[in-house]
Length: 256
Image 1 (cartoon, rainbow, N blue to C red):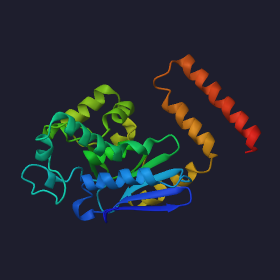
Image 2 (cartoon, one colour):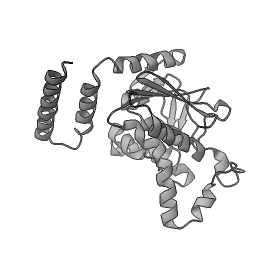
Image 3 (tube, one colour):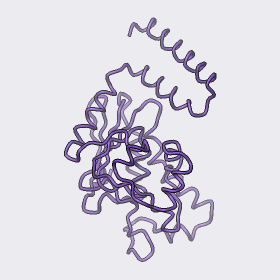
């Protein structure tokens, strides 16, 4: 990992920290390689992953040095470099970038983002990548890609629509406006809102609470809820019965 992303594991909890506060935790492909690598290498006994950030902002999004005229980041492709590749190469490059945003919702994990200050563009999408978001009362979400002539492409559009609905997601993305803590809570983007000074404590308390239930029950419940949006009422009832049958047999056989 780079000096700007840290991983600490304690038993069933892994804490991932964005640690480049001087640049408001702006992201580069190196950030995404680090995050993807963490997802691939997590110990099997980790049940909860807490994503947090040092400094005043969670993440200001893509490092502006990668934009035209920004001066570039040594060793990293600028947006102009990507544009010069053929379509298949661009698709492949973005797919690699997206790996940093896709593992947080693995069925065997529950992920929490502790979000303060600005969570903009790629920062907003990284927060959306997690299952839950504990937000400080100073949080400012914004999806600025469309304002810059781009689209949100880091796996953030699906969770955003799932949380707020199509019309509201469209308005948020096309205007690029800021969403404060109260609105984020009302829309369901923020799972909870706490004073800035209490953010780390509140997020850690939630992480600890999530490890209290038996792991198999948590995995089954997460899968059951994840599928609820695409199943009919009767299909969901059937899925509940199937999941409970597995749990009962597991409890009887394992003596949990």
